[in-house]
Structure formats: C-alpha cells, structure tokens
Picture 1: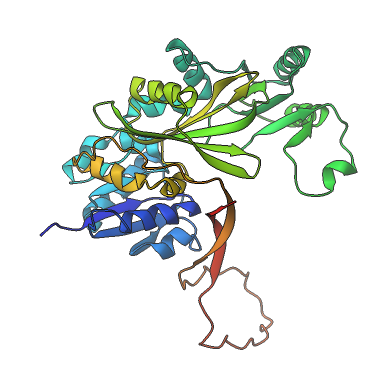
Picture 2: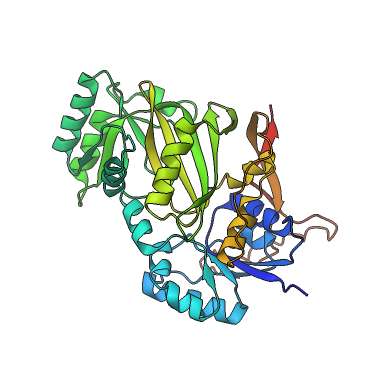
Length: 378
C-alpha cells in the first residue's frame, strides 16, 4: 500500500489554495495531506489545509529555521514548499533531509542570484539572455539622472525595489504635477517625479531601486519545472495582455526561460517573466518559487504542483508536455471558506460596558473570502 504524502506550505499567497486543490486531485490518486501555517488567522490557505497553525511573529531567519525543523519533525512532513525565509531554509536543506523532509526549492546559490535584481540581470546577461536597460539608484540625484537618460531615449521611466517579490513597490514616473487627478478613481502606479524627490529628501535612509523603461505587453510568465539534475521537465508560458490571458509554447519565450532555469539550477518550480522592449522580449523578473497563477496550467491538462512533489520525492515524472493549450481566459475573484477562529483581543480596556449584540443564527454559513482568483474562459 502506497503511503500518503504530507506537504507543508508556509506563509504563502491566498491563491495557493488552488495549488493545494491540485495536489489532492493528483493523477496518481495518491493520498495527500496538507499542513499550512500563516501569520494571518483569516488566510484562506489555513482553511483549505488538513491541519493548520498560526506562525509565531518576529522570528529571525535563524529562529524561523528552528521553527520549521520542529514543524517538519512534529508533523511528519515529506515535502516542504517554503515561501517565507526561503533563503535561510534552503541553506539548511541537509538538516531537513536528515529529518525526512524534502525541500521543494532551488539550492541556496540560485536563490541568492535572484534575490537581488541587479545581480540577476548581470548574471543572465552573461549567458546571453536579453534584459532591459537599468540603473541602480540610491539617491534623488541618481534617480533624476536615470529618468532623464531614459526619457531622452523616448522611454517612460519606472522603478521598483532592487530586491522583492511581485509588483510590490513598482511605480511609473510622470512629470505631471500632483493634483486632484491623482486622488480620483482607483489608486494608480503613476507618481510625479517631484513627489518622489521630496520623499527621498525626507527619508532617513537611502533607497535601493532599479530604474528602467516601462516595458510593453504582452507579459509572458513561463512556469518551469526543473529536476535536481538541472534538466527542465516542463516549460509553459502564460500570456497576459490587459484582461485577456492565454498560453504559449513559442520558443522566443521558452528558450531563454529554459536557459535560465537550467543554467542557474532553478530546481523544482520557478517562474520567469518577460515583457517586450521594442520588438524583442527581455527578462523582467525571476521567481524562485511557484507562481500564484501556476494552477492556471490546469486549463492545459497539466498538474504542475503534483509533478513537482513527485520530483521532490525522487519519483521522476519525466517530461511533462501539455496535451493541449487551453482557450484564452480571464481571472475573477471567488469565494473560499475561512476557519472559525477567535481573533486576538482588539479593544483597549474600558470601564463602560459594551452594548449587547445578539449572536448570529447557528444556521448561518461560515465566513468566506474573495481574495483567491479563479480562471474563467473568455
């Protein structure tokens, strides 16, 4: 009898409820139990897991490794998928393996290269992958020089942190003075240059930003599955052009993604993002973790999370080829149940009694959250 597989996802994105769903619906009908931890008691991944715990706050990276090793030992974890403190965890891979846990993440050298976008751009350029023009800035004067250089070439300048994940901190520079236009409608990524310079003047510490031209659509995120032997088993591009999304196997996207994944040993699941600079694709970002939208490959008949778990367990799935490419689609919010948890005490003590509030009827359904995104066809 084949034993069940115990998988742990630590503090991860809400969208990974679909990652968990795919593990349970694996094509081998293997029993999978999922453990999840998070700092937010209302994270939907806690409700989606078979067992769940709140993570302790304010742990150092070294303290978190000790916490993680204890979780793996107590919970009998077979495969650990780390997002939080990935760098520290992969540096202690041998200790996790000694505890019987495979760490589904690249080796520390690969994680270190792509933690800093400047180091990453220099490294991928060295193996022939094109990148956009970029400038590392730490002061207002450096920012102005970079923006003027890009604008002189007819480009719109943008900036983002030199290290970080996703679109956190991404802004587009505009010369338009701050006005009520910036306060109407939804928040915009556009920020006036003079506002940024004033913020830099008032800042107590220097920034560490990457300034580059704003790249054009389509954006193509190539999801890769790479074995410990550095051989890519799966590479599929997910295209994004406005609301419309789709899939591609065109080599102009897949070839440079494979070169990066194999050349730097991005073992297991990674996500390599490209956009257009003029008439050619250039690298935008590399994530050394599963993308939040990885589950969308299910529209191509592919279960990438399960293939990655197989690899981590030493059960090579071989080359994973999509049997078809799914139709174009869009992403909308969906409902997911939450755990019936008691939140920590929120109010300061007061001598005045609070008004009585009737309890909700017992027939009411559990709370739900719309933070997880589902793919729907167009």
